[in-house]
Image (cartoon, rainbow, N blue to C red; front, side, top):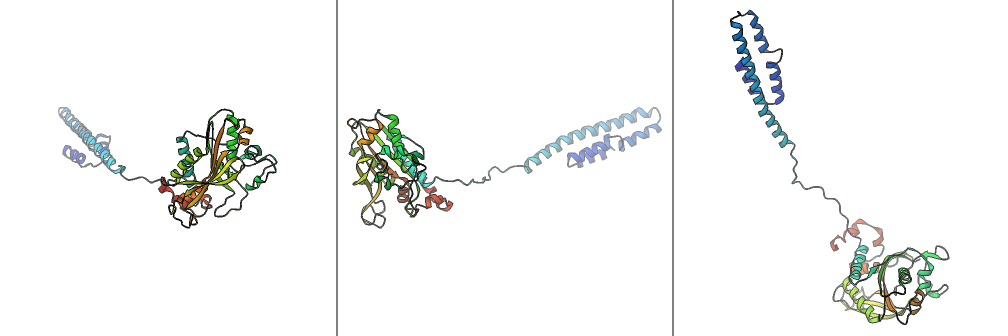
Length: 338
Ligand code: PHE
């Protein structure tokens, strides 16, 4: 009985089998109970000895079962650890990362430059009052200069701003008569243009305004030279051509030396070596006085950059509509610039 029990315990390969063996040998119906039944046929002298022997076997088997249980449990835990192991060296799924839109890249680069020069960034409403979009910019009602910027009117006094000059007029009014003012105003503007490769009824500008005590045209030139170098490369030059805006006098059109041919002449610059990038000028005395400044002591410059135009030139994009179509295949190509 003893040998048989020990062999059965040894043969167990799982705690479950071991439990069955325990029930068999230590439970109410099993070989040990069978042997105990034989007690009644023994003489009174033999009984205690027999009982003692059976009990010894029982205790021996119980302790063997305990020993085996510890071994099997450990084995099962180890197996579980191996089977349920997670391979943490396996690389995870890569989320599909987006990248910045080319217009946002241009805006951030320009903002970085101007913040570095001590400018503040100012924003204003896209639904604007005629007052700030036109009147304060020295473009009174009925003036033919209004036709230069075909406007979406909402009612007699309100419109979709045609330039962020409107934000500059708000800043001027707010700050007057304190000096100096140094702001750039990025944002969307709207004009009743037919959409084509170079025109869009909605586009984005970044306009700048500096007003101080002795601000001169040469300050404007130095500032815009930095813009040209930052956007198109350190070897770029700029030049001024006379132009006309109601709110600046004198007004200039600013060209940058062609970034494709370096000034020799190519199709992009139509053989001239120069590319027009923005309009600018010295703030008109009327604009200063309407906002509450004395044009005898305060002077300033302003410039307006069309960010789409910069993006098209800088990244060699041939159609402005690509910037709004949001075709992921197009947008993905800009991840290399980040
Ligand atoms: N507001 C002008 C435009 O939208 C640009 C500009 C800004 C010109 C400031 C001169 C000075 O065309």
